Amino acid sequence: MKFLMMIKGNADSEAGVMPSQEAFAAMTEFNEQLQKAGVLVDLNGLRPTKDGTRVKFGNGTPTVTNGPFKEDVVAGYWVIKANSLQEAIDWAKKVPNDPKKPGVEGEIEIRQIFELDEFESGPGIDRAREFEKELTKAR
Image (cartoon, rainbow, N blue to C red; front, side):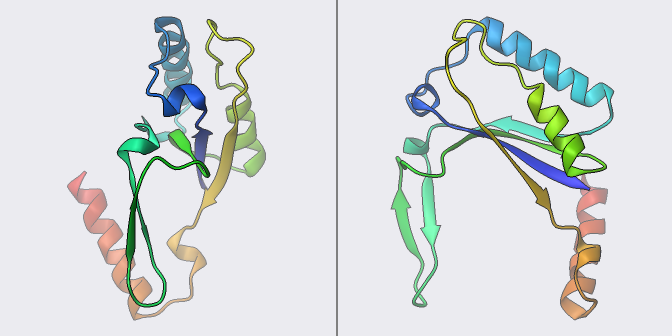
């Protein structure tokens, strides 16, 4: 199973404040643990929402809204492979906090990623499986 672990944004991440060197070191150590355990698929930090855009669908016409956004702010993410939600939770509990800001609250949302095998077979899913194979080869 794959899980997306999203780091919720806060006032600092939305202001574009970069983590301290100590925070980067601690996060790099955590990322290396994920890699050594063979569970890391992908990871990245995200720029503040002021640099982002949302495209909303409804009424037949997409609407484009430029940031900043106040709700559902994500500052970064990991995609991991885990055998269960509990294993993903265990990894999320190990995410380090910035040692220079021990009182700053943080939050990680964990969501399981759909696998193609969970969908009923049909032309669309068959094509999606072929695309997934092509994508894997391209990497």
